[in-house]
Length: 278
Image (tube, rainbow, N blue to C red; front, side):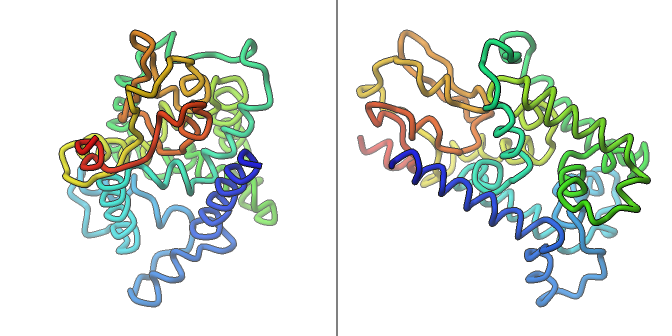
């Protein structure tokens, strides 16, 4: 019953995220447009953190959609105080690849954290996305998993789907098959390539120094070193040191799978002030 409740909550959150940010609903754009005069076209590109970040880097921030800037700011504030909730609670794109990753036994999957330096690649991709505007807007957006996921979900967009079929198939296969189905945890795209997730993680890192900011925390006196949290983490953000779990907040997306699966309730989501009182 507990598993059912947890999975139901996660599913509802991702459905809400889809309704807010993806066609044909785009409720976030519709709500924002009632307060802001914005002539931007309605698509997943509008609430996209990469575009305003790239425009700021290139000095073209005045050309950025107001809705995009608002979304970028909301991501920064929520990630600073509450962690990457968008990634762990709302993003259906990441949830879909994670779901695919649960379909195969671990023996058929690649554990990337044991093979490559995750953090240099993660932040290297973010820098590349920020400067990709000089290569042309269409290149990063065409190979964006958010966009390919939206197109595949909205198959009624037949004409555009056919015009961009090859790039969409390549992106979808890379993000959801190679980095999803055959990746331990199922979130390889989130781990290495997604600029929004890396952007969120930067603010979550600085949240360590903000009084009252929230994060997943381990109660060392309760941890028995069973490794269940490390095995369950889709972002491979948990390592064991001397039979004690350690959460890397540079990778953590606040999905809560570690806390849910802990047999001793040694992991919880709480503020750093609460931690200091223990």
